[in-house]
Image (cartoon, rainbow, N blue to C red; front, side):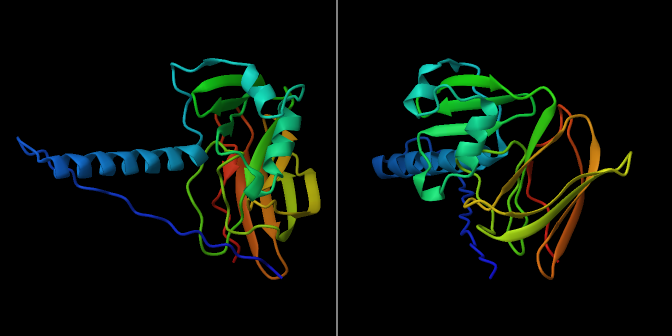
Amino acid sequence: MTNIYPREELDMTPTLAAPIRPSRSRQGLGATITALAASAVLLLSGCAGADPSPSAGSDQSLVAHHGLDGLDAREIIKRLDTMPVIDRSTELMASIEPDQLVLTDDQNNQTTLPMPEDDFYVSIAPYLEQTHECYFHSLTTCLGELANTDVDVTVVNTTSGETILEDSLTTYDNGFIGLWLPRGIDATLTVSTEDRTAKQGISTRLDDPTCLTTLQLT
């Protein structure tokens, strides 16, 4: 049976007023609204993979602190992307860019690991009804609609016609499936369940997304 995990979305678009002499209660309300708005921005950018803060420095200790010491980018991605959602750290952001894995903690300590030279990682969240915008996949915060769901996946090189991947997979607990594909190609991705299919063109170059959330199963 296909499991559907709808996510509730909170629309926070406050209108801020700026009176000349705000009362203490209004000042408190403004601070609360500002904090909520900032939280919303962090939530959205968490899955979109916003650029790291320029003030963030390199800190290898955070890798050890989160039990990832000695692992390369491929191994960290596998561990974090397949981890049950309930076990994921709220203190770690792991964003996949085409050429590097960016790890940032809640104190803005940061380190990066190089991605494999010949392989490109793309994480895919097929959906039925609900999805979200995403560009760089976040291993710790991105959530798709369909968790632990069996799907058939095919990737065909559009230039050569070669079938690169044809497999039956199960989405992770976060609703995504992760694929390692050759770099520098254009391909057609097809994802299907028993009675629904989604198809999309994809590319694996340095300016391409690592997070695909636009494959609606119909």
